[in-house]
Image (cartoon, rainbow, N blue to C red; front, side):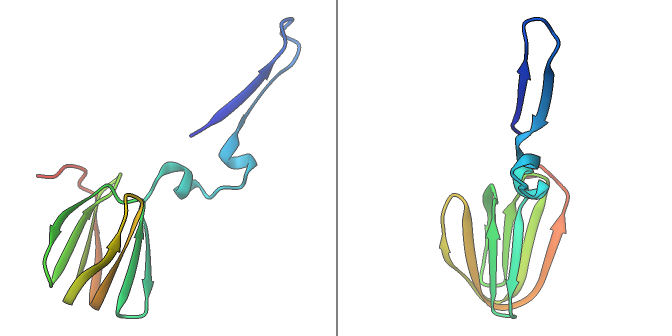
Length: 104
């Protein structure tokens, strides 16, 4: 979270504000939460994930900041991925969230 402040040497003016609030950035984006967008039953777009924990044609498990995201389906494949986002294609049967933070 980015904050800014203005102060005067005499202590008469002091103002603090949250830059994310000022710019009207949704809190989940400024916190870095994972965003999952399901596009029909054949495509999932994931943003702000931290890493790939498991990848098979039936399951993709990703680590997010606050937990794990599991995409279950048939003939799953990662269409593309970058440090910031990825697209998974295949027959999507379920998207599950697990709040475990570790990679145990």
